[in-house]
Length: 336
Image (cartoon, rainbow, N blue to C red; front, top):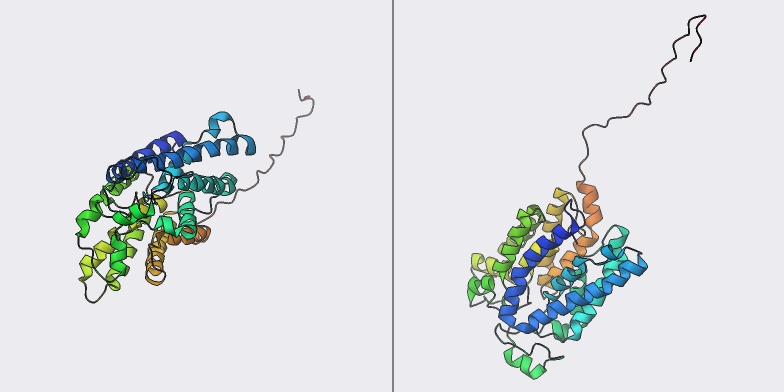
């Protein structure tokens, strides 16, 4: 992750860990130890699978084969999931992440964000597990392989995004969304902890304010422009902005430097395009739509880089050095 940075990889890993830690810790508080087990299992399996890939396939030294970013990518991917997924879920997601990292990142350019792509694939193939959102503090057994569906249905509630898409306003308001007292994915329900992580990454120069602001502002503008007639525009807009994975994606997915444009204007265009596509996917396809929007923008990253690349005002041409003629030797002198 974050391969286009002058910082050392261990320094970047420390900063990224510090940014993820508040969200992971609060998710454990809201959903119980099962959340911590799922995140840790996915991260550890990613790390273990990544070692032989780097060592024996890419022939890297042992020191370079132990990548902390594999573990962090697994944690980020699992935070997109609800706490009710079975224990084989992190194993499959870790395998997908390893394949994506192996196919793209070691060739110098990553086409897709591995965490986003793995979460999107799991959501497409296993929607019966990825859409089972339960209310916070409904703790499940931490090590149970598969939770009884009847027990899940007993604690299952609609997310704020589902309520908005049904044409109603979320009754608990923004307070529950900011502090995570609403149902949803483990890493997307508590906006306050995501803001803390985003501020830390910005101070450490690992978060592009243009990309994040472009994504959030575009989402807010579309929500205001197309708010329902029977609802207050401002209330609907900020509830829309805080619902689903918009804030989570604005901090981590939109700022994955290896899969977003490297130019500042390109990052801004990436954020605007992702915000518009998120609204379009939510309006016409239903569901969250953030994952699909980020993946489409990942495909357009080379084009955005090309269109926003800064060109110099002038070019300095290097002139070939002309050979100096040797001075004529006076008669009677011999050159040493």
